[in-house]
Image (tube, rainbow, N blue to C red; front, side, top):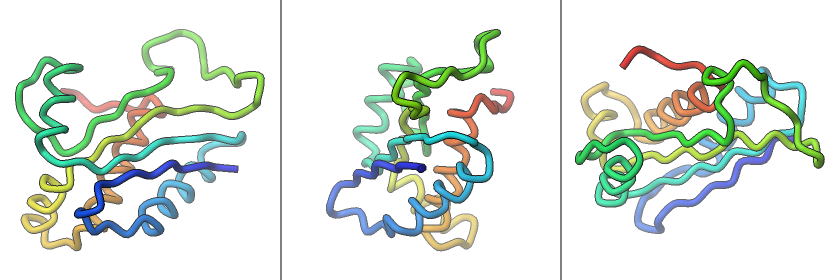
Length: 131
C-alpha cells in the first residue's frame, strides 16, 4: 500500500485527491513494496526559510524534497525497515510559485502542483538533474 500524507494551509485551494492520486499512481508503478511519502503545500515565506536553512539559498523556490535515504548518494540500495514500509521522505511545494508557473505555462494550478510533486518524487527516488 502507498500512503501519501498531505498537508496544506487552508487558504491554498488544492485538490488533495488529484495530487495524492498522481503520487500513488507513479509510486505503484515504480515500487514493489509499501511506501509512505509526505507532501506539504506552503507559502513563499516558509519555502524561503526552508531553502535558506537547508540549501543556503536565500530565495524561494517551487519545490524542495527531503529524502529519508538517497540511493544516488550511497552504494547501498533502499533497505526496507522492519515494518516493511519504505519511508521516502518529504516534498514541499510553494503554492505561490506553482500559481506563477502555471500561469506562465498556461496550465491549471493543480496540474502544475502535480508536476512539481512528481519532480520531487523523482528526487526522493534518487533521480536528479544537473544543477
